[in-house]
Image 1: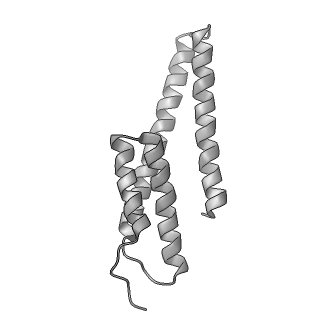
Image 2: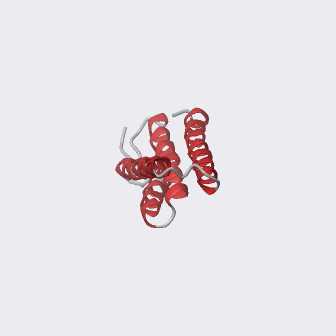
Image 3: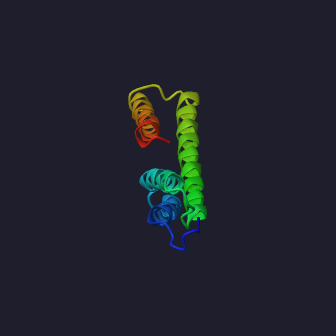
Length: 119
């Protein structure tokens, strides 16, 4: 079977959003990059031939996952810093709760992408 010379649009979207995740939209860009990258790779596997842009999709996936990892590390750092500073009064508790809810929502979103996306 011949390889296609066209670049898969989702692969290009994955790369663009992966770059945007590092420049302007960290959470939204990385989530779109991950979803689009997995979708592009899955579609190329399902169609039985190599669609152009697999490297673009992988690059977008890598950029997206690295940004998600960085976000999780930064959130964990700030939570640890707040705990170490003894900021468990008033506003400190509110900040910790908000960070915990945001982290839980991000993890639930990633899990939903895997289960719904069939990755």
